[in-house]
Image: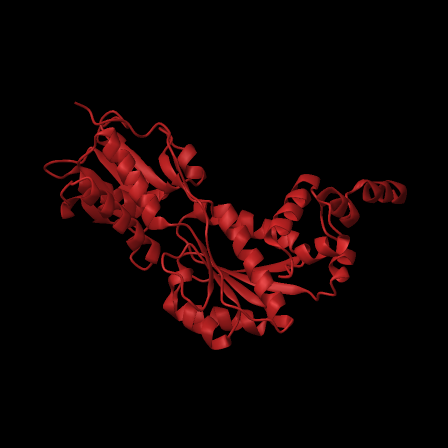
Length: 349
């Protein structure tokens, strides 16, 4: 048994293998693994790509090359979309493993608990916190982070705070592009389901929808804009309101895939064919978008990559602080894609 274990260890890629494949020194690989800032971004990207290709799992010895002590980061979550949260956790856990940091996941559902949860994390000696939506915009959470002066990264906020690192996409542009896509298909009555008003991304997506209509000289109709909460249940209610209007929309653009899936369900219940009678589009491109029929045309938000990047940014800031370095928080904007599937078509007639 010992012989087999040793053989597996000998066959596993080492930090030297990664260094050789990337054309850098083992020390540089170690700096990338430990999230240190004194590495060129092009080199960091190359090393991370080699790590993924070789499926390299850093060892304690690799960590010690940079003399780094254990880093613990907290991830707070409070999201009604299990599909979104699942993808977010995949990226966070993957990058935490690659960065050799411990990830502490804490649920934070009620406003009254937000302060106490952060206090608990800080007392448990976490070195930084990742804030996915909606906590990225929660004022009590942001205030508590500032009070403790702990490094944090806000993910998918529509309006990043100047004092905190952030990773997002251009929500306004993404919603603009989807609305323009529907207009180019020939739709003029386009219903829009807004996301939860406590998230800044919701307002940005609504602004993008309205800007596209204005550019196309299509008069806005407040009756076509319905409030949702990013939940499937709220999507059902919003779609019912839209599809009982005297003049129903020919397309519905929902601010996330959960609400779009609900709109498809309401359409089917009312005997409408999607997309022949009604086009439905979503936002996020979570797994839900391809597990319903018809599959959703949607905006692909790189959720996994955003969460990975957030962990990377956070680890780098923690290392910089420990080394006495300081700098302005980074605000990174990642690319999005408009993914067209079976749920959209030109309006009938």
